Amino acid sequence: MKDICEATSLSRGGLYRYFGSTKEIFIAMLQKNIDDSIYSVKKNIDNGVPAIKIFNYFLKIEKESILSAYNGLFFAIHEFAFYEKDQKHYFDNRLNTTLKIISDIFIYGQQIGEFKQFNIQVMANHVIYFLDSLKTSSSIFSINNKMLDEQFNLLKEMLYYENNSI
Image 1 (cartoon, rainbow, N blue to C red):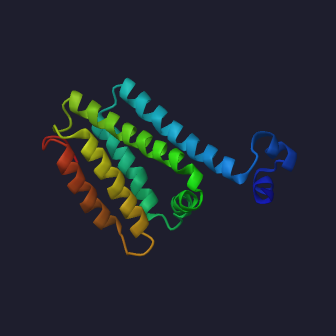
Image 2 (cartoon, rainbow, N blue to C red; image 1 turned 180 degrees about the horizontal axis):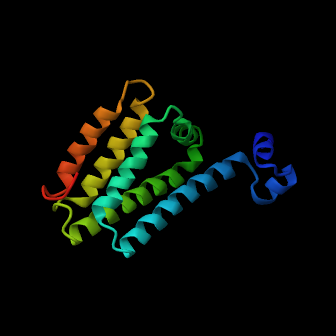
Image 3 (cartoon, rainbow, N blue to C red; image 1 turned 90 degrees about the vertical axis):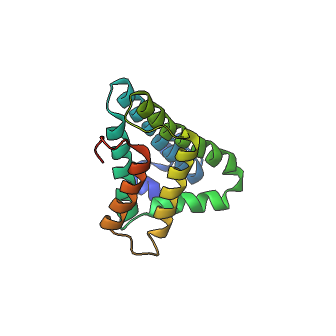
């Protein structure tokens, strides 16, 4: 909490007014991230942004995370989930929410004719575990831009009709 107070210029009392522990701060930070994702996808769908553009942006953010020299947040999430067994329900809900976000993009893409017909739930699960594996592997294997482009293009070939740009 001391480090957080120093980084934010908040007093300890000010910080404890809103959060009782670093655990609460971490969960609030993760929740804000997922809430922002829900809002962004819903807003883009409501505004008629092409599904391919929405999904490509999602992949762009994931690619940046995978290639980042600092992927500490990803590992912090895994470490937190491993040690905080009482948070399993939260992480199961987080996974399900992320699956819903991706599924909503896929449903929208199929409805407007940009995506092929496929089992949305199976494909959403594949995308989540595929990206999770790449993030985990990026700390021990040499993963480069070219390899990611090849893998992402393979994924897009499974999703998009040929006449849609990859």
